[in-house]
Length: 449
Ligand SMILES: Nc1ncnc2c1ncn2[C@@H]1O[C@H](COP(=O)(O)OP(=O)(O)OP(=O)(O)O)[C@@H](O)[C@H]1O
Ligand SMILES: [Mg+2]
Image (cartoon, rainbow, N blue to C red):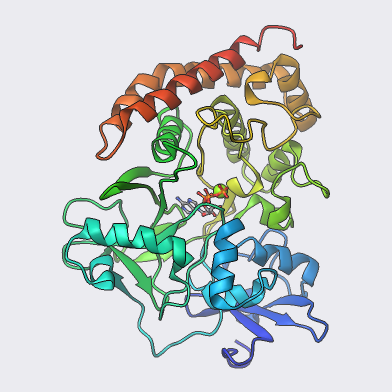
């Protein structure tokens, strides 16, 4: 460590921590430009991960063009950011100030802002926080609260941030003894708000009246992926009164030998490619990440993960997850040995919602297309651009489509049996996904229009 950590009154420098280990500092030049420098002890620590693959461990100072988009990607987006910054009295574009306020528990392993060593990391049960005995009632109150104050920003000791436009909350699971456990909440467990630096272990995304059945849809898609052999975030449905929420076990957490929970670093593909969140979609005034760019990101991953990434991309097209933008793919940085592809997450089929954009997030063979319109020559173009044999990619599309059809009923049964699930939404999404996958598979052999 160089000198002492910055304090809240010196926002010209924001320290970056992995627990209490100093990773580096984000500084602000007099003209407002940001820069990042690793701490010497972090550089000297064997196995210590880099902030990003755009910022390899080095004594170099990384400029604002590198660090600014990277930190903006840690923050919530759209309405979530607007409501949050208004409640904090900060400008939406001042990512560093926002991160200093809410960047205690983020996607991955890092915490931003001054350490408060006199405050012990801990948890408060939702029941205690809202002063009610019934865990369901407490969760319902929490879900309501998220509309008013995303991530409970401003609440004493609560500092958390996750990207994305959907309302969400990051919580911990406590067992009957009140100890944090790394698992989905089960009988006797309680959900709790992590405070003063304690890590969250589950992410909850409540239902959304604009996207009816989104919870069922996303759980079905991610469990379908797992059923056909694609590593996917573990998800379930949680209910609270008349509300339901997707509950996703954080894949950027691990249980240690001593049964503690440790954070694992991650970054999304926008961060890995040095793009700000506003360029997560390919199409825009300044283009964002193309399909080639998504697949090229595998250059830093082991070959098996490059193949797993192709599976993720194909799966997103087979289920018609048109929102598979650059922030919906991520890289994990385990302590050893090298970066890995994160499991699949944030997948839902757009097919039950005709009012939502039906075109895939990236151009396919040079054009805006719906997933169901992809034909043999488009897969060939995707394959050739990446140096793969077209026949191999087409075969993989067929295999995954066949596996979807084969697993559909089992996954419908499994998801429909979860408490709080409306089986009709599951079947609707499943039928539409199957039809889409069969259409895509059927077009593997026909000449493209
Ligand atoms: N199971 C998980 N484990 C760890 N991190 C996760 C998990 N699920 C999501 N994340 C992180 O949280 C971020 C936001 O989650 P998610 O993409 O599900 O939100 P969203 O609001 O639906 O996003 P979008 O704006 O793409 O619709 C992800 O980009 C990823 O960094
Ligand atoms: Mg997302």
